[in-house]
Image 1 (cartoon, rainbow, N blue to C red):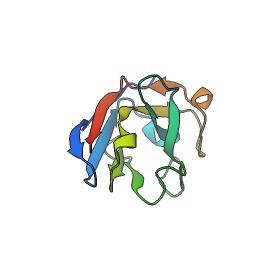
Image 2: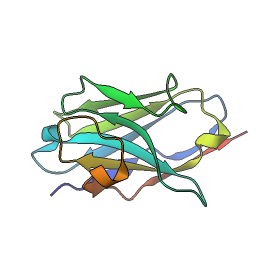
Image 3: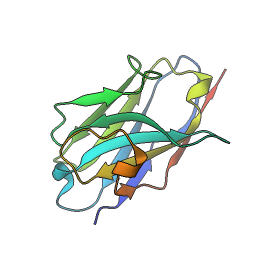
Image 4: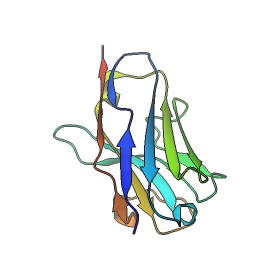
Length: 124
């Protein structure tokens, strides 16, 4: 069982930066691929980024590639999402998720555990 708690949401101006954190419980954090997803009002939850078990591989949605960076600290059971050059269309609730797999995972159906989400708004 893995419990995930996101933090770092808030309000930021367009062009700014913000870092989201996701703290995980459990002693097997390093055996999970991790991902970030987001859901804007009236839209489906969409993939943002994923990282494999040891942080050696990452993959991003085209919409955030070059602006967002996912990373993890297995010693601290935490995954991060550094977001730069933010745009109003990045506004959403951001969710952290854990997949019972060592490799990258991009689909919501591949993830076993989800956090409650953190709201993040980019003002223009």
